[in-house]
Image (cartoon, rainbow over all chains, first blue to last red; front, side):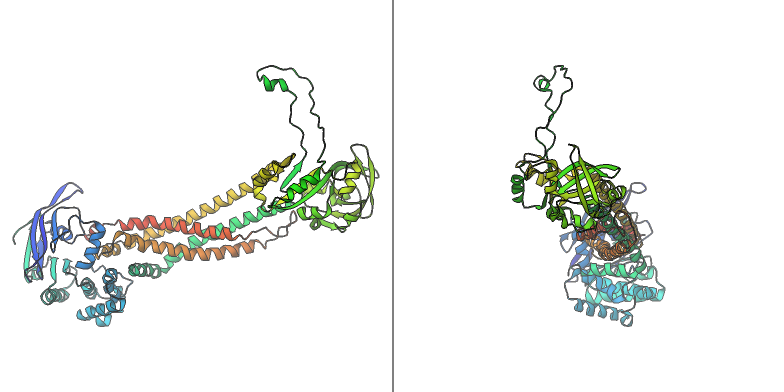
Amino acid sequence: MQNKIILKADNIVKYFYQPDKFQVLKGVGFEVKRGEFVALVGKSGSGKSTLLYVLSTLDTDYEGDLTFNDTLLSNKKQNELAAFRNEHIGFVFQFHYLLPEFSALENVMIPALKLNKKSKEEIEASAFDNLKLLGLGDQALKKANKLSGGQQQRVAIARALINKPSIIMGDEPTGNLDSKNSQVVFDIFREISKERGQTIITVTHDDDFANNCDRIIEMMDGKIQNK
Amino acid sequence: MASYINYRISQIHLTSNIRQTIVAMLGVIFGISMYVFMTGFMTGVNNAQNDLAFSSLAHVRVYNDRPADNTNIVSKVFPSTVVNLRHPKIIKYTDGIKNSNVILDALKSQKDITGVTTQVNINVFFKNAGNKINGSVSGVDVVNENKVFNTSKYITEGNWNELKQRSDGIFVSVDLANNLSLKVSDNLNIFTSDGISKNYKVIGLFKTDVASIDKSKAYININAARQLIGANQSYVSDIQINIKDYNKTKNIINQITSIIPYKTESWQMANQQLAAGSSLRDIIAIAVSLVILLVAGFGIYNIMNMTINQKIREIAILKAMGFSGPDVTQIFLTQAIVIGIIGGFIGLGFGYLTANLVNKIPFELAGMSTLPMAYTLKDYILAFMFGLVTTFIAGYIPARKASKIDPVTILRG
C-alpha cells in the first residue's frame, strides 16, 4: 500500500509570457508514492514553485499530463478541479492566509463545510480535535488575527488537514517562522505522513527541513536535477 | 445547505466592517427614499392638477360639431384641378343634440362609465344695471352634474339642490358676481345672442379656482335653459361623461363612436397641454429618480470593488481550498443583495417619512392648503424593485471580477 503511486507528472512543460516568452518547466516528469514526504528544492527561478502550483491543479496553463490515482487531471474544467482540490488537496503557504474575522475554529471548518459531507456538529468536533492535535485547543474560539504568527501557521495546517486530503502541498510553510516554530511544523508534517499515510509535497528553502524529508527533488533551470 | 459556508462568509464580510456596509446601504436608502418621494410628489401634483381640471372638464364630451368642409367638391374628384371658389360657407343644419334620450340609453349599457350628465350651454351677456359682461350659462341636470363634476363642493353660498326646483334661480361664480356687484337674492338679467332677455334670481355663488370659469360662468336649471332658447324637452348641447380611469378614454371613445352619430372628444384631445404637462412631470420624476438610483448603484459598485481588492488574498485562498468561481460570485453577490434589501426597506420607510413631512408644508394656492402628495403602493413596490435591480447589477460586476481572480498570481505574491 505504501508503494502505490498517488501523483504522477509526465513531461510537464510551461511557459511564462510576461514580460517575454520564457520556458519555466522543460518537460518535468516524476512520481510520488502514497505517504511520501517530498521536498522540492532549488534556487529561486528554478521553477520549483511553478511546478508545485501545476501539481496542485491551481495552475492549469501547462502542457503534459498530470495523473492522480489513475485519474487524468489535465483535461478537467476549473470548477471540477476546485471540487477536486477541496476533497483531495490541503494547502499550507508561506503566509497563513486565514480569514482574519473568523475564529480559529471556523477557519479550520471552512473546507469541510464546503465539502459538505458531514453535519456541522461533526465538522466542528473534528476541527476542534485537529486544533488540539496542534496544541491550539485553548485558542479555538479566538479570532484568527489575534493569534501569533506560529499559532496562525498551525491553524492553517489544521485547516489543510480537515478534509483528510490525500496530498498536502506546502509552499515554503516555514519560510516565515523562527527555527522553533519551523521545527514544530516539520514535526507535524513528519507525523502526518508517517501515522496517517498522507502524502506531503512542499517547496522549501530550508536545508535542514529538506534533509529530513523522505526524498528531495531538486530543480534547476526548469528540470529535475536528481531523483 | 450546500452554500451555508458561502452565506456565512458573506455575513462575516458584512458585519466585520460595519461602517463600510452602512455607507453602501446609505446610498441605497437615499436612492430609494428619493425615488419614493419624487414619484409621490409628482403624482400628487398631477392629481391636484387633474382635480382642478376635472372640476369643469368631463373625461369625455359628446357634442354636435361643425360638419366637415365639403365646399370644394371638384378638387376631391380631380385633385390637380385649379378651382376658383369664392366665399364658400359651411352651414350647420342642426344645432346641438336633439334626440338626447336615445343617446343616453345607449350610454347606459357601457360598463366603464361612472357618470353622465347633460348640459345646455348658451353664450350670453350678463347685465346688472349698467354693467354688461359676456360669459356662458350652463343649463344643467342638477343631480347628475354634481355626480360628474362634484359641483356642490365649489358652492360658497346657497344650496346646490335648490336649483332643481327653482326655474328662475341662478348660481353665479364669485368673480362674476363681484364684477356685477351681485349678492345672493339679487336679480340678474341675461341677454342671449338671439336677443332674448330674461331675469333670474341669484340663489348661490360658487368658486372653482379656475380663473377663467370664476369670471364668466353661471348655472341654471336645464329646463330653464331650454326655455330660454326655445328648444324642445330632449335638446342638449353637450353630454358629459365620466369613466372609471380617466387615462383610458381611448377605449371608451372607440366603443361609443360607433353608436353615437355626434363628435366624441376626450379631455386629452380637448386639453393637450394638460395631458402633456402630466406626462412630462412623470418623465422628470422618473428621470431624476433613476439618476439618483444610478448614483447609489455606483456607490455600491465602488464599495464592493474596494472590499474585493482588500480581500483578494482571501478570495485566492478560498479558491485554492476548493471554492469555485460561482461560489465566489455568490459570496459577493449575496452581500450586495442583502445591502439592497435592507437598504431598500429602510429607504421605503425614510421616503414615506419625507413624503409625509413635505405633505405638511403649507401651500395655499388654487384651492390647496399643503403641498400635494400621493402614496401609491405600486410606486413603492416599483422603487424597491428598481433598488434591488440596481444593487444586483452593481454587485454582480465586481463579484464576477472576483470570481475570475487567478489564485496562482495572488498566492505567489
